[in-house]
Image: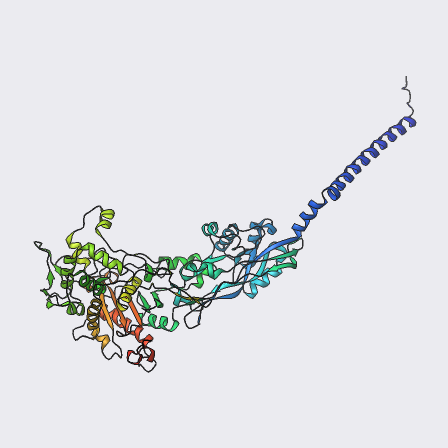
Length: 629
């Protein structure tokens, strides 16, 4: 039987459609109501909040780093300035996937994987939000063009013009002026985050580091309006930065070059001072290096070559080099012996070529193995007689020697504005007991009298001790800064002057130093021949390797770097001291033969004119005596 056919109920279907349409209309109305309510909430109720938020996204406060102060030599020649440079910067907040952006930078500029790693380290360093971080300096025209063409692939990357520190004199002042470098994480924690906003470099060594606060200046700000991509549309408000103060140094470029030429490419150190003022006229540590390599980030290869060089060009021999002062301290020992009453100007000691302690077989040799016979104070200094000073040291004892030599600046930092200076070592009983847990032995006192043993000093300390001889005990600390923005630099806390029982003691020792250069038997008489001015000097030798008892020093059997160091200290003119020079030539062996001519060349460069005559201002015969009012 066939199935019945069901007819379609149009009324029922129409009702279903009407109900669905009604539900849809209700849902749409409800959703529109929610949107209208949300819009009312955002646009009316929270208007102030979102208006401020929008303004903050549109207006940014950007720091304006100050220009770093310039550095000049005493004659106004530029030693450190600021040079314009195009830098590539990255702003992480605008770059999105900044690591991918760095990959594009490396691709566009055809750089190495090593540079890519360096860029990432720089971006990761601490900085303020939305602060551009320089990742590459000194872009050339081709690199700038490549970045411009690929700008659509480099969000957050910009080419910015910046001032970068530059040292036009190159290697000449690398160890005195120092250099600036990128701020590292450790330095960032100790810096004022506000004043260093936008600044990426800081003084690392030398004067650049010591006077960082005054050279840096004060940061400025500007409020800028930006578009959605972070581009600056206009400047709304600006507070100009305060540039760093200019610094005039005591150094003289001509004398610095003359000193380097006198050293002749040998490893060593030279310090030249004005004894009355403490001004450092020249400061040479050779070999040196180019400080410009460190400003924008030195490559691993270049730094490795400097660090691993056997000649240690990064090592500041003037401030950090520690050497036994040898016979250079004999004049100071003589002053100490006179003031302590151990010797008199006419005291004599017989020198058979050696000295022996009572009831001891060991012989402390004089450099002249045949001996000088009867020796007084003047002859002892002139001939650098070891036996005389062995005997005097034994009579003085280590305690009194320590007290006197400390007053001359040995074993302590002597500079006013050179924070890299090493204190050196002036040994004492207490020091040895604390260091080695051993007593002090008489033999150690004996060799201390000729500047050997545990005693160590820097070339700067030897120059200062010699300056105290020249000024007859007037203490003025050596310093490199002459003035800041025209204001003279003054030592606020100079040590006490050296006062002796009889001021004539200075003259006795200085007379011996004069005979070293101008005496018939002086050890450095060659540099005094024909000199238009009188020099007071003293040679010295610093042992590098010990020589056994009874053996003789034979340079031919020693490696070049195991030979003795050569030292010489001097001041001139004797009647009116204008310059003090201390020279150390590594492995130079002869203080009188190698170091003394260097001292003479430096003095000539300062005291003589182009015709080889003594300048009028340094000629004691042309100085008018002061008339009492």
